[in-house]
Image (cartoon, rainbow over all chains, first blue to last red; front, side):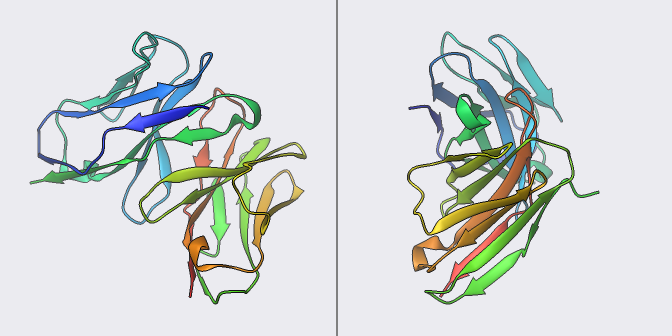
Length: 112
Length: 112
C-alpha cells in the first residue's frame, strides 16, 4: 500500500538556520504531494503542495520539489524563525476516496 | 468564516459510553473525511465520504460509524467507548484529488 516516511524528530535549530525535513513516499502512479503544518494546539494547515513530477511548491519561505526519480518531497527553508516551531507532516493523496496518507510528522523546535 | 468546524473541541467521557462528534463545512466540497491522531502525532484516515459513497478504512472498528445527513455535514458516532479511543479526531473536506484538504481544529477525546 501507499506510505510516507519522514525523518524522525525533534529537529532543533537556532533562529536563521537552514531547515531540511526529509520525506520519501511509496506509491504507484502519480500521487499529489503535500506538506501540512500543525502549530501547538491547532489543527492542520496546508503549507504547500505539488501535483506532478518536478513541480515546486512554495509558501511562507518554505519550498519542496516533487522528485519522482527519488520518490521524495523534502521540505526546505533558508532561514527559520521561532514562529516556525510546529509539527510538519508530509502526505500523499491517491486513489479512491481522495484520502491523504500521512507520514509520522516531524517536530521542529526553533530557539532564539 | 470558519471553513471546517467541529464540535465539541474537548470531550471527556467514561468507558462504555456512546458519543458523537459533529463536523460541518461551508466550502461546498463534495468529499469529507475523518482522521485520528494518536498521542504520538500519527495521523490516520478513518473514513472518506463522497456524494453518499462511504469509503471505510478497514482497520477502523465497527464501533465507529460516520453519518452524513447532507453534503455539508459528516458526524462521527462512537459506540462503547474504550480507553484506546482517546485521541484527537480531525474532520476535513476537499473538492477533488488535486485540491488541498481543509482541516477542522480537532476534537480531543479523552476516555476515562
